[in-house]
Amino acid sequence: MVEDSYVIILVTVPSRDVGAEIARSLINNKLAACVNIIDGLRSIYYWEGRVEEDNEALLIIKSRRDKLNELIRSIRERHPYKVPEIIALPIIGGLDEYLRWIDETLNRS
Image 1: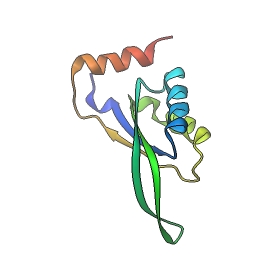
Image 2: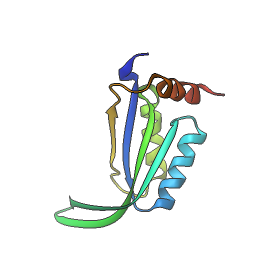
Image 3: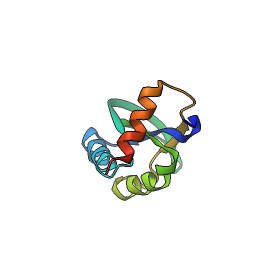
């Protein structure tokens, strides 16, 4: 297994419901093997000249690098933010069985 072929994608969303909709779409379209939704996040950020504070949820998406461009397009189509946070991080290692499971899940027809 090439270790840099797996990625974790972090995406903030305005609510758990929006996150669940995006997550289901990614899973159903074989763009992600698993999506965790962490609710109750408080984000403080600079946007359009001022400091903003919002309650959000965080999606932790497990996928592969070869799915990333299509995954980003899919999120952008469903995400209500003008500029959504979509950050991909390489998975540099992990349990071989889990990484194989990602492959098996994304390769199912």
